[in-house]
Length: 184
Length: 411
Image (cartoon, rainbow over all chains, first blue to last red; front, side):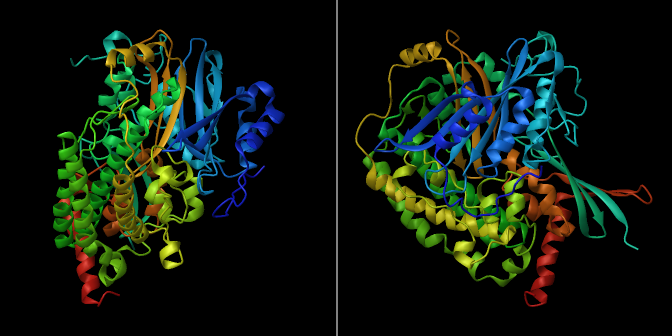
């Protein structure tokens, strides 16, 4: 499928966070939406925006991104994550309706556990090219490969880096005590 | 026949977050392709945070960037406050917004000055640096520091706005409303600036969205995105901020360097308005959720959760994600996505079909966290001959183009 590109300056009718959450639940099951968080601010403690926290399995991840695209072209922020023992959990951070005007931003954080026995994620570069640096960073820092990412060169680590060391891993693939120089 | 060259721009200033090398493919003077390679000085700040508690990480996050240090602090704190569900008193939210806008002022003024310097408009550069002193003075009155202010803490701020400070801020706003005019003239009345900046380094609306561009870079391409509007945080919800986009001023967004200049100049006036509203509407009350630091640390040690915050830094959306684990006093993990990280992905698109003389302008146009290019190395791929183009020569090339345009009457 071709990834939709919404060329409207403002999504004229932004869907409510509940509608987006319901759509995610209907496609990926009740347990896919972990939480819908209200973020309040200002003198009146008014709701500034919402964040939806979701979780999907690796093989449903591309479907998840396509489901978001039913609403608007997802603005991609970053991939964060952690080494959680048997899995590396990646959190993809997106925004829907970034351009929908006042108080309409909807953050979507989706957690994807990647088993260490098969550290490969499908790349979303062909859908959202802005993901390039994050996928390359995740690859060099966690050792998670991305299937479909054209440029797999190092991005933040130096040229002479020993690529067997994955700086953010907490197991034997991570830096040993000898690799860390304490400055103070 | 035109010779083909491959030209790297870099290495870069060591003191900044993201030094970047851009390899440009040249046909004669025309740039036909570009590859960007960051990573000359990744400091592993996220890794270092694993051994520090959230209060210590505040001061680490402040040192990510010298110019938008406060933006990183607020993004980090908002992520921590999200993870641990800590409220911030309204007065503290207003003071945070005040400092964020002061920071935007000096960041945009520095940028406007440097952009003028790059096209050989030196008097505007010196004016920009002189003007910027005023806001640095105000920050010094508030915090005692000109950079890395140490103002914010978990659940509030550490320094209050006194009546004297409020008076200083009001004087500053008045001063800028008069003295910033020369930069306004650059984007409205200067034919040379228009000739040098218009249609240079274009990023289209669609590309800005697809490549996840942020901040003034995305807005200059006509994307109506500003987190102060679309997801008001701190006190912004009370001010009715609207994203500054070129189509509202000239009917059309070109997405070029000129539009990036235009957006930033108008945002300076927007920031001045917001600062006036902060001072006028400053609510009474506490400036901290909890004054006792040991209690804060004990609370944070018990807290469990993942927090996410995106705020509108001077250069664009600054995203921080923090995880706190119950029983662990240190930050379990932390991810920082500075705005340049997002905007640098669009650089190769902006370089296409531009002249080498415009490369410094295009690099500067996204306001990268790179203050200077050290040198360039030009390689003649047909003979393998190498020639080092120094920063001074490159700058001279850029200025020569301006002089050429001036002789032709700005056409």
